[in-house]
Image: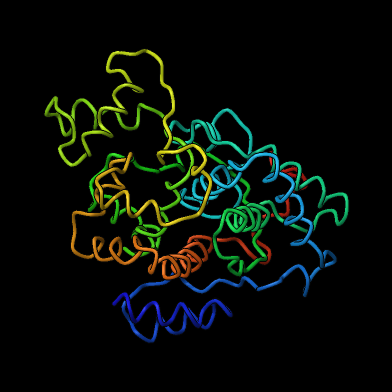
Amino acid sequence: MMRERRKCMIVSLVGITLMSLCILAKGENTLQPPVKLIWHYYKLNTTCPDAEEYIKHQVKLFWQEDKSITAKFLRLLSADCLSKNGCDGSILLDGPNSEKNAPQNKGLKGFKEIDKIKSVLEDRCPGVVSCADILNLATRDAAHLAGAPSYPVYTGRRDGFTSSIDAVDLPSPSISLQQGLQYFESKGLDVLDMATLLAGHSMGETHCRYIKDRLYNFNGTKKADPSMNKSLLKDLRNKCPKNSKKDPTVNLTPKPENDYQFTGLYYSRILSKKAVLGIDQQLIFSDETKEIIQEFAPKSGFEDFRRSFALSMSRMGNIKVLTGKDGEIRRDCRRRN
């Protein structure tokens, strides 16, 4: 299955439509219903032909000042697209009951940077570029600066009207592999998408509260997760004391200078049982996901990973998009017009 799908991906980087047809012909993976997004939509169909260049320029300025912008945007886009509303920019809306206030989204960052990009675009071509498209394009550009492929982002999304805590169904990072797969399948994504998109955990930080169960009470045993590397366990227990009232953060990768680089380190750490988050380590415990990990982990598999990342990010960016007369083009990403 994986080799056949990868053949499709090599062709697909020229255009997402070719890739989708190839996968459908194999009949081995389900895709979301077709959407009316267009490659270079703003250049071909609007009064803002340089929209993508404006976004790319602003993202480069942010990245030069703060490399963590890549991790921030990846998490922000995932929070938007994997909510019940899909990729409609609803994560950006303010309000006491908005998605950004859900417990799962605590600590989300990048909002101010999206606001800045939006203000630049509103100054140059007001009322044209959606916040949902800005978030997708900015994430692609930030990921590329960190070493990911500059994959094509189809555009033409419109912004949603509503944002609610109830729309956030992101599960705990301590869920089982089967629960994780069921969650991704509920979003129209498959096992390869899950194993690829979780590699966003190769950069950035996590709060201790998300891993304390692995450190002290795995599956209610009052013991540590037996699958965790012993030296990693000792290090994380020092950083996340059992009875501490504080909730500090820990790096998802071992060295700070590696936090914001797009590499295959995520997969090699899983093979070494050094994944920080439980759902990541779970990927080694099924034949199908283990095969993916073993393919992506070595240096020889890095290009396969890059291609898979391009495909899966595009698939995630297509979830429940609004186009045509649905939604609106917000003039301020934080509130409805």
